[in-house]
Length: 83
Image 1 (cartoon, one colour):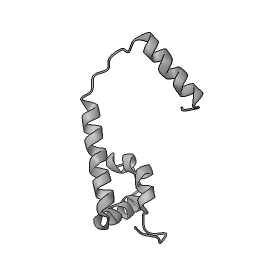
Image 2: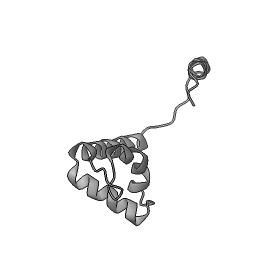
Image 3: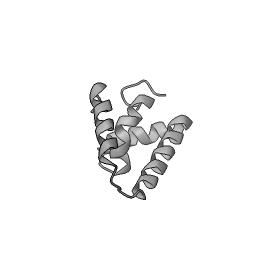
Image 4: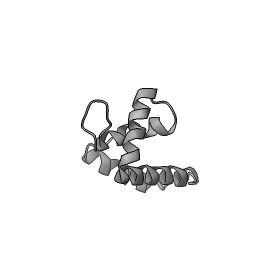
């Protein structure tokens, strides 16, 4: 959306979202983000989806995965240099 230095851009939302939702953004940046959200329907949808994902993830239970599956997954990720 915005292009001026005082405005957030849609691409910035992703990097700022976690800090924004937990209240740790500096006030000026938080206000810029809020102003952006007031005028950007796609970013509002993204924020709502993010919030829903976080809420759903909190209800997940940790389970052990079989050692073979863990080894295969780690091998797959190493081959692709994913960290």
